[in-house]
Length: 102
Image (cartoon, rainbow, N blue to C red; front, side, top):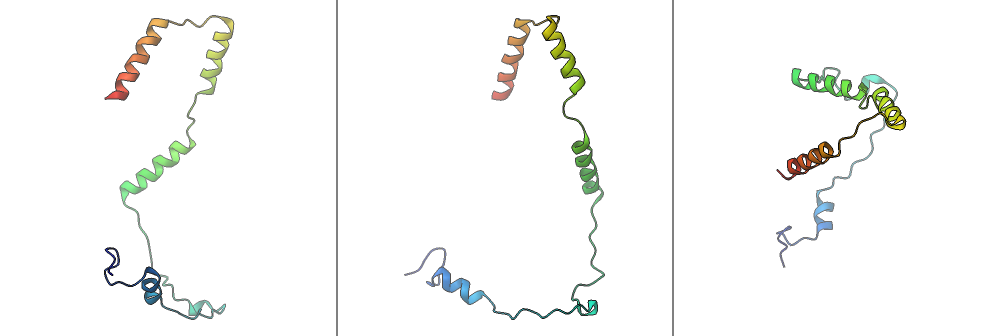
């Protein structure tokens, strides 16, 4: 019987085992000259990638919330001095809901 995923009829375990090479672990010495890594390997980023990385770092360092403004508004609300317009709040909620549906 053939399997549509494995048309050769072998079980998945057989396929995996037949493709696996058994190798002996390499014995490593502390001698750096025996290293198989080339010292000429380099990686370079495009200018766009560098800009994205820089912007990501700036965003990470930027404050998301203006704590001073939040505290000032909290204080105004506690003192009863912060004006609230229920109609404007309702309009903005309706506009937000409509923009989410688009």
